[in-house]
Amino acid sequence: MNDAAVEDHLDLADDASGRPDAVGRPTLWNPRQPNARRSLLLCGVGALAGLLIAGFGLFTAQGTRTFVVPPEDAATVNGVPILRADVIGQLRALDDVSLGEATPAQKHKVLADMVREELYVQRGVELGAPTDDTDVRQALVAGTEAVVAQDALTSRPSEAELHGWYDAHQDTYAGEGQMTVQDVRLPSAQATGADKIVAALRSGSTPAALDLKGSGRLTGDAQFYFAARIHLGDALFAVARRLKDGEVSAPVAEPDGVHILVMTHNQQPLPASYQDAHDRVLRDFLAAKVARLQAGNERFLRRRADIKIAGDFK
Amino acid sequence: MASSPPRRRLFALTPILLVLLAVFGFEVMRVQGQAAVLRSDPEAVLTTPALRRTAVARGGPVYQRYCSSCHGAEGKGDHGGGVPDFSDGTHLYGQGRVAEIEEIARHGIRADDKQGFDLASMPAFGTAHPYKAEPLPSLTPGQMEDITQYLLAFTGRATRPDAAQRGGALYRDYGGCYDCHGYNGEGDDAIGAPALTDEVWLYGHGSHDDIYRTLEHGRAGMSPAFGRVLNADQLRDVAVYVASLEPSNAKPAGPR
Image (cartoon, rainbow over the protein chains, first blue to last red):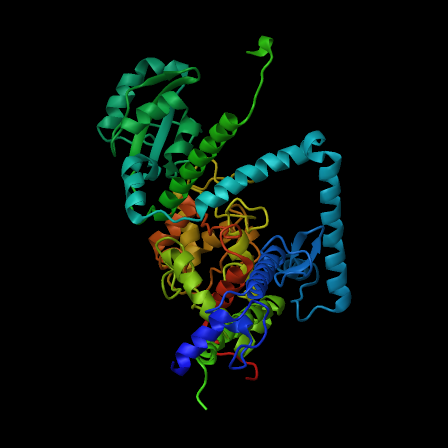
């Protein structure tokens, strides 16, 4: 029998007591030989490793650490973190110093105030402030809506999406039209001769040459359409908007007399190019996305909730 | 005397154990390094080479994933969309401190986060209601042209001195521009009102039409709030990375 065969024979013949085998090795470490103590030992090592891993995860995972203050926090209050970044922001806002420049007293005061705030927030929740206090309720509603909005804003839409939005809402991105127009008002005594005055103006006379007075609604400067509409009123603005440069309107009867409009320059709204409107397109696209997500969020909350409504309110 | 087979197996296991030990050691060092970045004064991270290396190395990929789609791969911004250039040495909000950048990354600008910057925006003076937050007068096209000429005059580009003079009066009085941009156009980094006297422009390149368009339609750029997307490590790292893009911060000043 060669050495290896002898060794195998002796291994198999040995018991599970852990006594040395024929070549002086403890059988505990001989993987070819069954050994109850080894099994228990390995089982224990495995359990211990598992506990260590679980314990490490339990006490160091973000938001669950209880033994130490995580490096990103300045303190925790009943497990709720106070971020270092917030302390640094407060130091800058209150004392205009960085963390490195702040004195211990400044740091202590800022942190003490923030701890106090956190304590009162937690106590407020315990006392039912979200249920009883209308300000807290409104703040919670606004805050929850804001969270949905924040999530929606963190992903940037593609250029194709933005271009699609622009194409679908091109009218929105047209600039305001502008007009420079004179508004002549005829007193009641001259109203019957309005047609002749219009004819004279159309043949090239100016209101000044005909000794006509303005209504006082316009200054004679260029105005955006929205301003012209406010100054002239809807009826006169509708007439003015159709006039071309140099045109004179037909007489328009208004409660304060008969008006004649002499258009100097009328620039219709011009559509803005995609490039010129890019920032507004992005803003509007994101606003619409936020509105959609908030509506979806509300539908989800209603679907998930158990809402019972009294018979007389159905 | 030759080793027995089990002992040989133990020798074979040694390299594996060493590798595991090295991985564990490396992970401990990495976590410690990151914790040091978080526990330090944010401004000190930029000037301490070891901390800076850690933060910049980790912040770069975060920037590329979350910021570069707007600010560009090299942080040069986008004049078409009013996205600031991180490397031009000017700051729209704050003074370019790491803590300020981190705050913007966390809470955003006009991003529906109450801790973010959202105190003011550029009114649309060519509309009936220029500003939501408070009543402001609309301007006529002529008044907007006058203010445009006034702003062009800061960089010697006004073509109508009389209009520029009228524009100055409007700027300092009726239009209320001074309220945000300062009496002399120096800007206010607390509310994101840019300086108007230099040659750095946020929207477009400061042409007559760019300025007029801004007056007419207003501006309200937005930066998302990543406080619920990125963790504290990532926020600090990306802030340090962005600060490092500024030429004056190109190299750490502190001792190695």
